[in-house]
Image 1: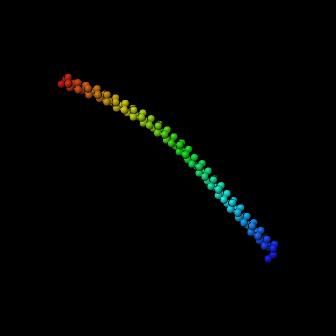
Image 2: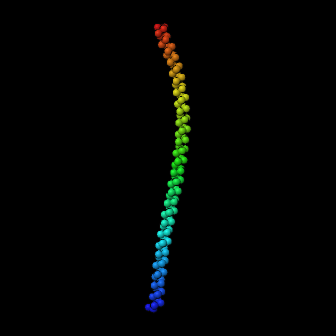
Image 3: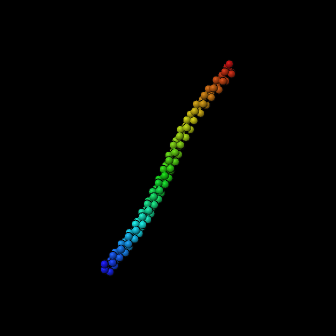
Length: 104
């Protein structure tokens, strides 16, 4: 084999090694970029989920407050009705007791 053929083969091997090294470096960079993009997407999704959770909690608290206020109003009205009914019965009971004692 001639010197030129050996040189050509050596040059081709060196060029191939260079291309392989460049491809490996490019692959490592692509992996790093993909990991960074994935991490950023995950952080963005996590932030959106946290914001949505805060909003849902706020809405739930507001609904709970509204329902509690409505329930308290109903209970208060019912309690007032029961109190008035008890007062009316108390007057009747007092009158009955007085009638028994005085009339008896």
